[in-house]
Length: 157
Length: 287
Image 1 (tube, one colour):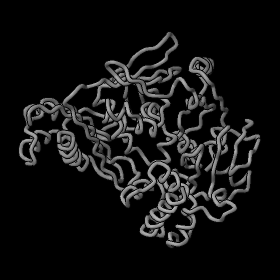
Image 2 (cartoon, chains in turn cyan, green; image 1 turned 120 degrees about the vertical axis):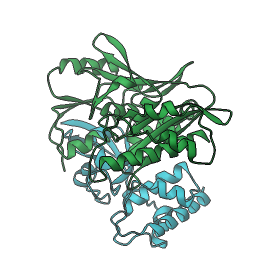
Image 3 (spheres, one colour; image 1 turned 30 degrees about the vertical axis):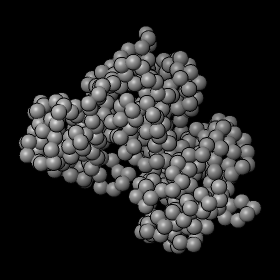
Image 4 (cartoon, helix red, strand yellow; image 1 turned 45 degrees about the vertical axis):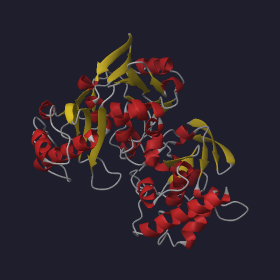
């Protein structure tokens, strides 16, 4: 067992974990933060994307021990006292989801994308989200939502 | 799936990592870099080492250095850091171009330059770039450091010239000087998928013609391969929009290759692709 200290959505946790425990299992099973789903379990789909020290990672491809000392932001930590995060609101308003399974990962990956590129083109959004799969084929609305979310994030700054 | 159990250690210096590796001689230990290839293998239980030595946080193994005749890329520099490095973009743009096509952004945030090289997947994008640019790998062995040219580094499927107990420290990327253009052409079925075939091209231009070219192929055998036959025909080929002479020159791009069969294609299809993609890559590099 290894002792790790991880901050998740602003709360600091100190836990004993087995080295083989994946970050996504740590978040879901240990901390009860089931907002981050497990999709493919093969690193393909991106449903389990979270931000680790500010950058998107697939939490099925990170060991909890590798996250020792890190600051993790999940979909559950996005909304503040002022309501939804602008990217969450944009996904809602642009109907960027059908079944919703890919949505937490899509939103986290989109937030990562607009950090680097505050005004992404459609092409840049499509390549920026290449690691996130939507099997309802809702990509057109997802692209629209990311553009809208990016504009609102830009306007808010 | 959940990986089989393993011990985990996280040394903070290369020396400490090397010591642990030496002490573990005979045991089944693996170095863990960014984990973007190893963790899926562990999850699928295609690998079950007794212990992982996590070298992903060793500071001295990270970063890019601009040296007089080469760029040094330390092994644990992430793909994302490589792509964004101004030194890499200016001095060895082929590395930046190919690295930007590795997997997807989230994987590039974790996956590392050295991890990719040491994993030596024949469908990985970076080994062909190492070959095309004649990189030299710097390795820590029991009795100091040694250097391995890229042409001798990739030995077989997922196998490199690294000996048990050795640690890849980084790679020297020679600076080619003025007049060179670069391109990495990757053919894959879906956005983040592995290359069915990839082509790394470096082309030196002189007065509207190609004076020298280097071509390395991804996934055309168990290791990346240089397309020497096509390279020999490149000098003197005019850089035009026409297709005649360049097409003729690269028609031998697949010579000497032994491409695999898998669900994406048979060897003859891959040989065809290698020719088509080489033409595209050389043309892009030359303009």
